[in-house]
Image 1 (spheres, rainbow, N blue to C red):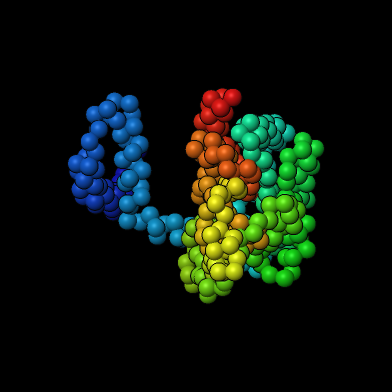
Image 2: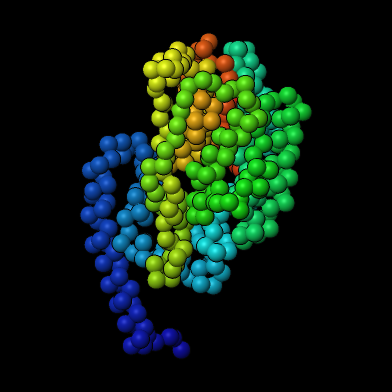
Amino acid sequence: MFPVMKYASKVNGLAFVLLMVVMLAYSLPRVVEFAEKEDQAVSLYLDGALSRKFEKSYDTQLFLRELSVEYWANLRYLLFSEGLEGVLIGDDDWLFSKEEYTFPNNMDERLQQRFAQIEQVRQTLANAGKRLIIVPVPMKNDIYAEFSPFDYGAQSQALYESFVRHLQQNNIATVPLRAAFMAAKSDGLLFLKKDTHWTPAGAELAAREVARVFPDLIGEVNYETHNGGDISVEGDLLNFVKVSDWLAGELKTPESVAGYETLKQTSTDDASGLFGENTVSTALVGTSYTAIDDWHFEGFLKQHLQRDLVTKSIKEKGPFVSMQQFLDSELLADADIQQVIWELPVRALIGVDQSRNAWQATMDDLF
């Protein structure tokens, strides 16, 4: 009448109890270690943050975590040709950031917010006697749409052209790059296959376009760029590809790009070359496209503009945070700076702006 526990059920029960004992023995030292390091345990416990903090710490140290992540990644890669959340795997081992495919439903509203931010920047710089020049960087899934896992090239192109058109209609100086990138992409990679950023070739093309569109920026200081040997690049998108090496093949192979060095040339026959400019009249504000030395965008700009630059660029925060920090700095009040070149990846227009409240507070203070 009543269920009877069989031998197999007893084995399962004993195995479960043994597993609990092992996990308890494994966990206790980590609980003690965590408690010893945490100097605000009481306050964190009262507001419920202590358990969340411990769970996060415990999860990252779990001895099976890396193995579980790897096998789950292998399964997704084998069945669906997918990486972890954040990356999309295209043809010929090309990797794309999921950010470039996440067009929000409230796209028009998002763009209006961005346009308003840009207009506030332009007005603030104009009030300080500075001209704003925007360099919109096209999206990787637009320039290399043929390798993309999804057909978003048309949407990305339309976004780029709409953005440039808005800037031009509102008399904001801009350097459109997309046409030049499309024309030159067969000559060499302009974006890294396994990274979100442009290559040094893409950075130099952008710098050349700035000089071509705005020849009035070209100075008289002789800068020359020299090849300093190849650099091995571990693409940032590989952080989302956790498959085993035996399965990944060439996918996880680092890329190689040319390394460059730009130096000011001096000459006893050339006063500008010997003494350089007395003041720096141009500022460069950018993201990791500018901040990462391997891409050498700042150096190429010095070469093609033949002038020194002051640079404010930040990694992993986006162009609006970088510009906010420029506006918060003493550079805004520097009367010698007459123009500000803003490197602005178009993908930032559709991304979530986590700093918008801080940005708006800063802009309210400026006006």
